[in-house]
Length: 229
Image 1 (cartoon, rainbow, N blue to C red):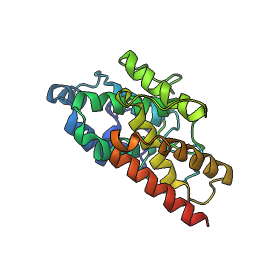
Image 2 (image 1 turned 30 degrees about the vertical axis):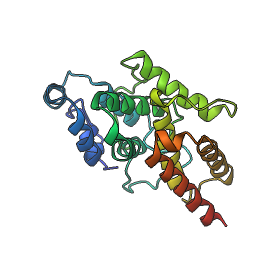
Image 3 (image 1 turned 135 degrees about the vertical axis):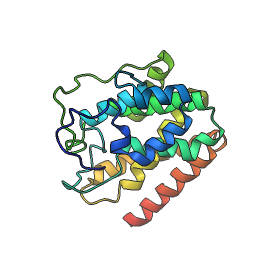
Image 4 (image 1 turned 90 degrees about the vertical axis):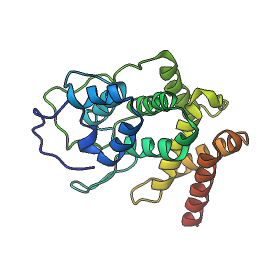
């Protein structure tokens, strides 16, 4: 995450390019040209993805709650990492509009996560956002809802592949597993994420519907287990 001066009154509405410029490049490449022009030139234009990202910056949701980043140390925010995973590892076979909805669903799910201890406090605003933006479409709200339901309910069945929630679940699991080795992560949190990944991998149909993400989660899980031995 790039540290910025606390006076953000002159920032454009879309702060995504300043916080995660590389990831914004990926998002910009799949936005329709007319939408991208409005996002870049109209300070009053509100796109669901940029509005959600703005909220995540405002509400300290740029990192996993279990991770405490050292003050002043640069890091790629979790919302940006999830977007990169979904675009690079899952987006090749997904239509742009469907992928944009999936990205919105992923950010909406993060907006419902607990805030991080220090995941975004470098960005100060005159008025903090009290509530996350609502989903632009009902199915995107349902997508994020399914993600949280699966993660919190061990008896919950895996969502249908068409929902988009599956790709988000795999991306979240992959990103978390990749960071579970960091100092300060509690053993109970690590174990909960191992159990969650094993639940996902237990649905063999995922290997067919999301082969690349399935393989990456499996490899990350095995790597973490080896580190913990």
